[in-house]
Length: 279
Ligand code: ATR
Image (cartoon, rainbow, N blue to C red; front, side, top):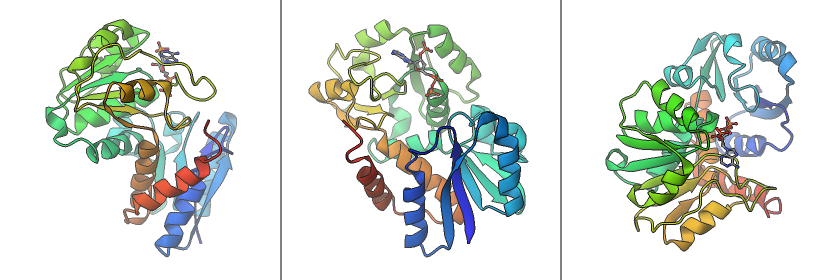
């Protein structure tokens, strides 16, 4: 039986094992996906042990997404550009790092917003999650994407680092609050609003939004953040973080098995697990 898993610290609340084990079962693949608790100081040893065992691959989560890079044999171009790995594939004894977080987010957006290239996006936040999402959106062809952040210099850094062509401005949270009406896609990537801080919101939605705007929050606990509540009250379509989680998993599954799994089942499993845990 091929071994897969997710390594992180902490890891016990990860929803990935149920989601992937269900997908393996549905696709009649003999495999087992486990939680792998790895402390930062044990990372190299844990990676080498999985390689020696002939594991098919694994996911990587906080705090190892960047630290794992020196222990891999190869890197996919996008993962190298982002500087973070969430999926590792054992390709004939060589471990190759990929990033399916940003592309997973884009996949979820494409299901809800047609003709991405013509749209104007605003990304809220400039941390690791924003970096993957911004680079993946621009690589997908979006031509205008501004970034707002509490610390504007970090948004400027992200724009400078991006190797793909895009017209982008780094702006303050206040400037974003006043100019939300110009965006077709607004993506909330900060931890503000995540349980237990559910009353927080990085920006307030003060202006009217475009009626066709899609407002996305990568948080899924709670399922509807304060930010999404405000967006919904302004009449926008909203999307929570379940889609990004499901599609990053689906893209990882495809890299390991060559099969793109049924994302409706994956979403159902995740929602079942979250039931009771969200507020
Ligand atoms: P991640 O990898 O999850 O993106 P991170 O790299 O620590 O985490 O980045 C966190 C992001 O959330 C940053 O953009 C941070 O803003 P600063 O760069 O100014 O620190 C943003 N953030 C966190 N808490 C916030 C809050 N309460 N209000 C607004 N922005 C917040």
